[in-house]
Image (cartoon, rainbow, N blue to C red; front, side, top):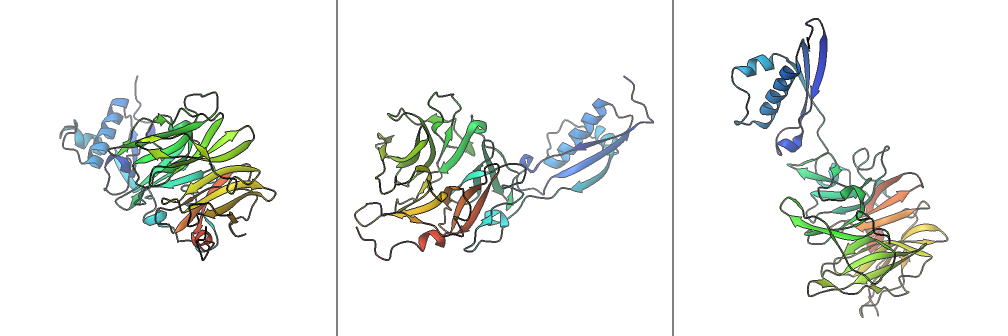
Length: 348
């Protein structure tokens, strides 16, 4: 095939920050050429990649480099990701705000359910699968699917307090009972292949896993149109048979999602009542009994659907999802909206 010298074409090459963590943000290299063959174009890509990676092992020879570089007529920086704790966003007060607008919560894709690594440098969230963004050298990477198998068909991530295990719900194996609870363990910089929790005596689907520091696992058992909160105790490296939480907690038309404190001192949850899907909190008394749940204030329960609550690892912020029936965003607010409801006396 002949490549006419009179024809001008343009080409973009986008090296990413993933190739060389800690370096400057990526660049869009605009290549403009006359009569550039595919082989020559690939040569340009190789040079750009070598320049980007700073690789001494590049197969581009010193003689080839000048020929390729003359096609590089312009380079412009692309905007870096956000930087700083919590995506560098202004910290919220007692009025909820959207978290990560345009980055995690976007107009084009619903987001729901969020979990943080203990150091706050990894954020896992639901968006047509489980996605992740990581803070590398102070800059947050572009969100992408998590690395473990089945991430695209999974949802509602729940990080163990020590950060060594990530629980989530998934239908990756086509279980006839519906989605089930799975987990992946830390493996170097990534995660192990998922393991299914079970078997369980409970029929139906299971979702919304949340773990305490002692390994006890809380989750929702979906039975028909109903949902109930259960807890499986961790003992000798295994989860025991799940036990349904008392009617003090399971007191509403349907129980949806919960988040347990690392020390199991409180449970924040969403439940369906005549007012819609609202957020509540129950604190444990001195004898270990769950107290009567208290509904969070109207600034939090401001719409008909508030679901998927969680508390940040530093206990400073409450995160939750607002869903309008068609689109969901993740919101955050000062966690005092929860802790200010703690009884002055623990009582029984």
